[in-house]
Length: 450
Image (cartoon, rainbow, N blue to C red):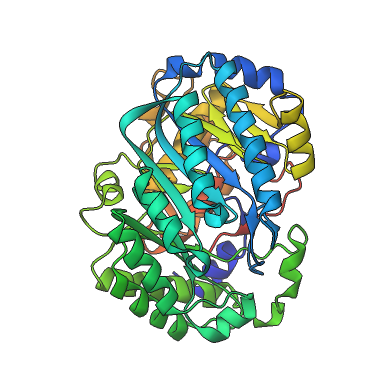
């Protein structure tokens, strides 16, 4: 792929397409009443997944794009967890106390900022409010720097089977530039403790495109990380959006790599992981060949949701906590972001819905197209349009964005089958964006496509 095309598409600001439509399309016209009606049917649509957002950290990583607050005290966390427990009751009641849970994901922030007894109480609350499938999967995001032995023990005792550890980079120069000092030894100790507690699924998050990062430092990070043999890696490009995340202004923009350098870093990481025995999956994930994600990718059953690439096949995701986004067959729901407003609504016995989006039939079709492109790098438009009431022509005709991608060799089309070119897969978001009917209509800045 030529440098000019890397610059042309790699610098484009595009969604990550963990949902469609994406969050900028959400509207305040969708509120608690619509959510309650959707929850009333949640139990009829099969098993559900539950996401719990814990928006607290002990220190701020300057690259962070998440909704989180910094606290040195435990009081705000305890108060928040009490409110979240009340929200669980509200959701369970609205759903008729008849929801079967297949997957649970604790995200943040730093979910393990909870004390062990608080995590135990939250799991007990979930199990009392919802029915759990036998063998339900429970995943937790972890900051290895603050993970202590009692919390590891609590995670193991309460059924956690997957842990996602933030690593980002082991280069101390990069760590200093992002305000996240984390030694290899801290990470190694956390992994050993988690595995001794019976938590078999370990994921590492790495980031490229960070300040002062080089191809060599990316490679050295991977060589250290693979010594711990996590089952999966997620490799994300840093999204620099200081207009939305003011703490990112502490990062020296002059030290950030350009699109060409970001692509070189991403490819160097990928090459090193493949050499270490990991299979490249989708845009930014890697897994050992016998991992469930690798198997799902090979069989065309991989999905994409707010946690990225996943084996989660539930059509319903219940989001709990401030800023959490949920997905129901009818559409998307997002809770209030400000902690005070979220807590006020729940304390008043009101579902804390701030906004959402009700899906049209065309939205559902476009969502399937974008998901298959993001997961498989190809899609059969005819197969997806069959029975939907739409034909393929309306997706292709006058689609100038897609035509340009084909002309540039980023994608090909044969009949109804679209394929992202092998050497352009890192630009798959640009191809997905060609089928986004709302792109650019909401004035939102997204991260770089590469």
